[in-house]
Image (cartoon, rainbow, N blue to C red; front, side, top):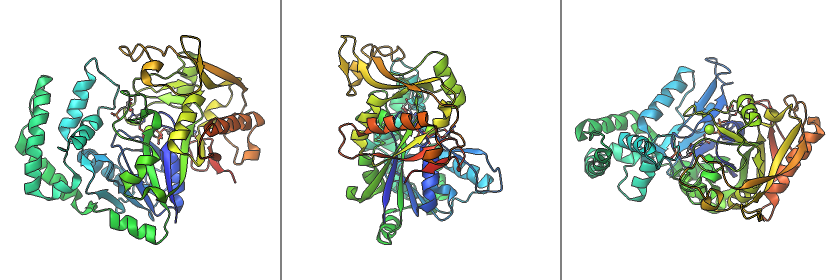
Length: 442
Ligand code: GDP
Ligand code: IMO
Ligand code: MG
């Protein structure tokens, strides 16, 4: 039996979907343990006759859904927008993919229409964080304030009514504060009952399924959303999401003992990207940044926003490695760096005082001018320079990689090993989005 967590090592969009899809070939259960439909995990459909080779962006549904032998669970730590989930299920059905193996934790929280409205209204204020406007923050806020509704509530009409009324009353106060019309109770209540009917058989206590898999020693995969730099506790707060995308939360969000996780795979993009506001020390506003965006097709899978791009940040990676306890590294999008004459890796930050640091500081020290989150960080990245290479796309083994690419990857590995308790090792290298453009190191 093995439990593997796959998590984003940076600011999200590292290629988690593609790695989970690959690892799900030998997994019996895949669980999303946090987040909601703010996720955009892209997989190229190589499995169904309908729409072959079409890119599919999954938002709620675990990336194991392409393997018909895999049970997919939307875990207790997630927040779920029922309408958007039903739409996603219908889209998969339209390309011939079954969601018969999809299960939803009865304890996962609901994202209700007012959550998304409030998220959008907050984004129109000076406090804008650049969220996906999917209602993630307001839904988790309600969860923590213990007025949230859970998927299981949809199957208990009277209980649902008693929970929804006070929650809506409060949401309406907030909506009207923003000048938005209040929502009526009855239509929303009826909508919830309909969702309960539509999703009912899929809303279950997920523990027996998980325990059975664990006892039968079946491989289990935990799929993270976003990356540690947007973690609610350790990310660039307040420019973060409202959950913990780290393995420390994976066990809780999935319903497994923390000691069960034996492998933690870090998905590391070969350069940096972020979508949304907040400091990004290695961001490039020049033609190099634009080239990374163009070649890497760096546009949000959920919102379509252009992603901010820059060189890989070794300071952030070392921080991420400590917090996550990575055992293995999956480096993606190496091919996007093909053809550069020179590449850079950030290994330190120079503060405005001239002091050089190699630890990742708190947000206020990264961006003293917090009033304008889009202003460049006042921290200057210190770079090491690396020789570029011409082509990695056709490489299918370590030995087939150009020596310069090997050196670049080895340095990334080294940076994730600095001062950590666990020593992560390069394990998977991805040189293209297609399933066969990836190889494993022994
Ligand atoms: P996730 O949110 O971490 O699952 O990542 P996204 O799906 O949002 O973004 C990753 C994008 O890069 C997707 O469009 C993938 O198809 C693509 N991708 C993944 N791995 C590679 C790779 O090695 N090379 C290239 N060129 N594209 C890749
Ligand atoms: P995947 O799983 C990249 C970012 C938003 C914003 C911040 C908070 O595909 O990597 P939220 O809507 O969560 O309240 O927004 O987090 N963000 C993502 N960035 N990839 C994602 O998901 C993201 N999900 C949220 O842009 O900065
Ligand atoms: Mg994504």
